Every structure is written in C-alpha cells, then in structure tokens.
Image 1 (tube, helix red, strand yellow):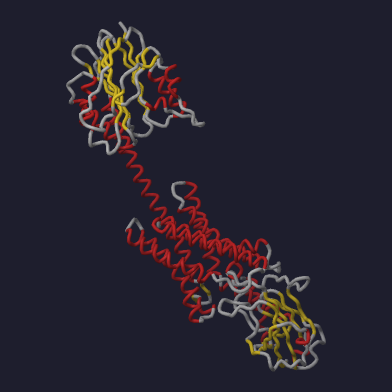
Image 2 (cartoon, rainbow, N blue to C red):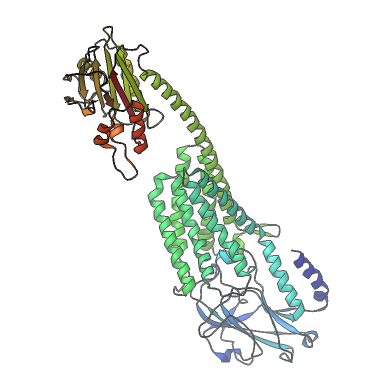
Length: 627
C-alpha cells in the first residue's frame, strides 16, 4: 500500500507534463498470418472489437489464434522520448507488434504454446521504431481450449479491471502499471479478507471435530472452507508471478476451487439426513466436474467452457432450497439460523450462474461496491454460512454435553438404585458363606441376583439375565426385584413360575433367563432353571433340566433338580457374561476356562472374565458350606 502511494505521488508531476495515448478501437480476425502484422495491411474487412482483454463468463468463448489491429496518432512531444506500451492481462500467449516489428512476447509459442499467468505488462519500444506520428499496433494472441479466469487466480484482483493498450513514456507507464496492480489488489482486499476469515473458521471447525470426534459435520464444513479459502490465497502468490499457467500446483488449485462446493453439499447432507442420498449424488457430480475441469485445464483436452452452471449448480441449488425448507420445518435448535446461512450462498450462486448470465449482465456489474472496495457477494455469503454453521454446531455440541451430563447423573442414580435393589439380605445364613461379584458392562446392567433367607435357615439364591441392555433392561430388573419381594414361596420352581407370569407382556419381544437354587442347612440343594446357564459344583457342571425363559408365555411349569452340597465344596451360579467374554482376537472365555476356575472366589472369577474381554454384564455368586 505504501509503495503504491509513493508511486502515485511520483507519477503526478510526470502525468501533468507528459501524455499517455490509449488505443480503444480495434479490429479482430480469427486465424494466423504473419502478413497481418504489417502496417500497410488492409484490415477494413475485419470485425470491429473492443480492446483485447481476458476472457470472462460474459464473453463468447474462443479457442485458437486471432489477431487484433489498431492505429493511432502520437503527439510530437512523445517522439523523442523512451517509450513503452502497457497492456492489461491477456490469456495465454501473445505477441505485440508496433509498426510491423515484434516488440514483446508473453509466453512460449514453440514447440507448443505455453501461457504464463496473466498480469499487467509494459514492453519497451525500441528507439527509432516510431518515426512519425502515425503508429500501427497488432497483437497476435492464442487462447487454449479451457478457460483461465478461475476464481483461484482472479480473487486477488491483480488481474482485474482491464484497460486498453497504452503508449507513453516508459517510466510513467511502468509506474502506472504498478499503481494499477496495487490499486486492483486493494479494491479486492475485502474478498481476500473473506477468504482468510473462511480459512480461520474452517480451522476452528476442524479443531472442534478433532477435539470432539462425535459428529462429522464439523469435519465436512472445515474441509470445505479450507479448500475454498486456500485456492484464492495460494492463487494470489502464483498469479502474481510469471510462471507457466498450467503447472501441477495451478491444476490442484483449480480442482480445490471446484471441489469445495462438493464438500459443502456433503456438509449439507450431514445436517439434512432426509436428503442424504440426492445430496450425495449432487456432491459426486460436482466432484466429477472438478476432476474433468482440472484435467481439461492442465491438458487442454476439453474444448469450450465448462457447463457446470447447468450440470451442477442447478441441482445443487434445488437441493439447497429443499434443505432450507426441511431445516425450517424440523424446528430443531437453531435450525432457522442454519437455514438462513445455507440460503445466502445458494441465492448468491443462483444470481451469478443463472440470473446474471440469462440477463447478459457483465462480470463487473455482478459485484457489490463499498466505496472503492469490490465485494464478491458469494464470498460474503459463504463466510456468513461458515460463521453461522460453526456457531450452531458449537452451540448444539454444548447442549449435547449438558444433556449427556444430565443423562450421566441419571444413569449414576439409576445404578445406585439398581444396586440397592440387588443388594442381598443383611441377615447371615448360618453355615453358608456367600460371595457376590457384579460388574455391569455400562452404567446400568441387565443382570440380576437376589438372596432370600427363610425362617428354617435355608437360603434362596436367584441369578438371571435380561435380554438387551440399557435403561429398558434395568427397568425390567427393577420389576423383577419388586416381584420377588412379594413372593412368599421358597420353592425354586414356584418362584420362577411366579416371575414368568409377572413378566409376560413386559419384555417387548425379549426374554429373561434365570437359575434359582434353594440351599437347606443340611446341604440339600433344589434347583430350577429358566433358560439360564447351569450352575457348577465342585468344579463340574450340574445337570439340570432347562426350562423356557421367563416372560415368553404364561403358565409355564418348571422342573426341579435336587442334589447334595458337601462341606467346603464350591457351588457357583453365574451369568453368560463370563463365558461370552471375548479377547481382541474374538476368542471366547468359554465353558472350559469357566469350569477350571469355578472353585475360585467370586471376585476372582469375575475379574478373570473382565480381563479376558468384557462385553456384557458379569454376575458371579459362590456359596460354600462351613461349620
């Protein structure tokens, strides 16, 4: 900025004393013939044309070679000074002829045309080339098969705001071109700031994703903003140099510029699940167009302008409109704000790609003007979408955290209640030592156990498992505990039958397994089983008749099995969380390992299964007769 002001101050006295001649009226003809550079060539049959400039979307696209010719009068005061010709940025390769003599070349013609990044240029005019006031200009220009006016290279503004070719004092024209470059860049400063803002918001979005890793919405948004912002920022450095126009880096920037909308569409699909399939199809279409256009740009294989306005933007605009309606209809937290953010870039793109094109509005009139600043409404709209989306996603994440915290407190309270319900009797049974280990897989489990003492000194033990997990299983455990508290019988078969009838219609398509054992002071054991694992006694599995699980049908009668429990002989009841524990290789703990450790204390058995790989609730009850 300071250098531009200094040049401007230095140029003021020069501009006051010396003249610059602008050439506005030109004739143009397609083809290539060296004779067209001669001053005396008759170009009256050629079509009239404005001054040559870069291609834009408002101009008919042309690929190939064409010539431009113009003539003008120079004042006598310029004849004896070092002169130069200044040109605004042109696409691809071009030669400049003055009075039939080649004065400047930009790019390479042989062995094949290779263009350089368009920029403001001045070519010194050889001394003595202009000998009279009449001067003849000719420009030979080649344009490739694909457009070069991509936003990735034009967003900086350096190559914007074209001017007609000018002839004047060399030092003055050089200062003017530097002034124009700095002025253009300053006028497009807002768009660069918007790109930097989008990049920062994208970095925040990616940071939130890697910090939370709970939702991919932040990931898609961050990647989309990064691709969109990196293209013009990197293009600023590339397009301000005289590098070959179609380097691999430039091809990547073109791809990123066109791939960013595909990522935006994937982000839109993540916040509108009902539109996931059509939006993913639109994103794949946009990605295919990005690959095709980038390939065409790098290889010059494609002839003509890309048709993405109709092949991509139209379905994306339709999908975005539907997504906006769905967001408003859902009435979720901040959904209206998110719909507003989505609507802005969709409306801006429709304006640029459809309305302005249909009305024939030139590129310069499609922008907003804030004083001397030129503002691309698409950049502003996307920046607003970025800020809005990140804010909404963050606020939703905070609310999810609060809900998770409340749910965690509720689950902790539910676990305390469940543990109190499953707590065994405080009264000790003479002659029996009972050990219990209970390791739920989550906050609340689906396993249950109960101890019920009888007046005759016997002990009733019940171990079971509710199919499923979570709160529904925990509620069934609570129901079972309540049903057992009202049970007066101490016969295992009657206890299971009573539980079965109370659970019918409550298991919602599931079932409950249970094994019930009554141990008398004499060591006599009575067993009944409802689809549960059999118990172990003295290191061996007890053969017991397996009945139907609880809660399936009403009126089931369960058989009882009797056995004797000797003194100091371990008796084990357990849930399937022990045998079904699986290690990282998928190998189960299994029945053999369970049998081998069945004589161990309850806590040791439970910890062995947990260390092997717990994936379900683990309940272990061991009983020994002592005395």
